[in-house]
Image (cartoon, rainbow, N blue to C red; front, side, top):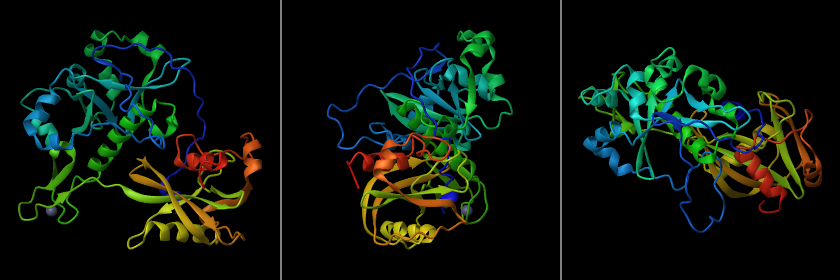
Length: 375
Ligand SMILES: [Zn+2]
């Protein structure tokens, strides 16, 4: 089932020094986060997770406060266009998340004023994500626009100090977060992932799943309600659980190459969706058995990772093999093999074998096992 999760990527992520970029009042990148905790966590979070991000869930039920924040010059908007995020590419540096203030949002939407904020909230164009340093952050849906970047080159943008020539050197574009492969600062990556996930959910729940009547967004975008009074069903954002596991046999690890991996030679841990009526441990054992015919015994939880491609939570495990003969399910995999720890530690990525992408929990599971920290 790994192919259905779309747990693929280019596996390439070279960390470089961040180049200072141009920023402006109406248009720029997020401020760097300050530490939220004095003591280090027992286990650092996986990419796309954002510990310390204040979701301020109770505020969602305060419509007046939410409306005021939409029009607040201090608020920050994270544009999402058809599941793509706005990023700033700086020549010679890593990309940064591009965010907007309310002065730039109006031209992008055509208009924005106190009279139409409520209607836009009902349509789900704004979703309150939470607070960072007391500043409200919203996901902003600009999918209705055929060419949102043209709107960003509006007088509002010019007034912000980013002219056409400047755009060429800086490079502003809507991009698929998957393709950035963890090159963004982790807090920015987590914020863009959250914005994308919320807008994905809205885009696929415009109608009630029970009666087919249009739904409306409530609670600042965290619930949609059927507009038929006789139905009145509430629909909530969802994320689908998937297990991902490193199967080990002493100093050997079981890795597979999915048929759909786009990068030559990339191997990864096995993974699959949890089915209804199934425990996580049972899902681990079933997926490993289905894909490789390997049986597993003890299963230990490691950590989890939000994986908004499009709407998953990856639950990471180690599983101890109780059998060793592999029978590959070629419906899912192109290959599956045991790899010796020493070989993995000494191998340099090439087209015959490369490790999973750096922003993935698969990579984390493997690296922690290789370094003897887990497994
Ligand atoms: Zn309904």
